[in-house]
Image 1 (cartoon, rainbow, N blue to C red):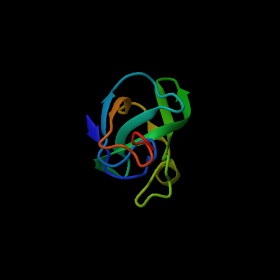
Image 2 (image 1 turned 90 degrees about the vertical axis):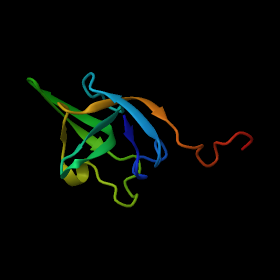
Image 3 (image 1 turned 180 degrees about the vertical axis):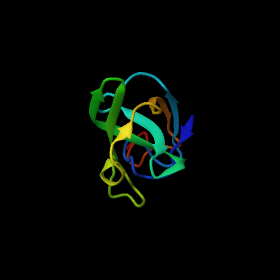
Length: 106
């Protein structure tokens, strides 16, 4: 289980949203994956899978932010492609609150 702390994946995910992620399956384009920040291993990132490359037993993927202009946002443009080996596939999200413009009656 993970919790989103910034806006780099808005509008898909926002700060406070919860994620259930499993170490399951190979990355597929468009999936959300959670992995350790390649620059700071104590931090976890959630990103959308872009391109995927497999060679033998090694698979790497391009990690993309949905909102790359958000403060503090980082993705493969900054840290390169990510090993799929220790990544988790997001299988469930729990919204912390309704998104602006999605409340009933709007």
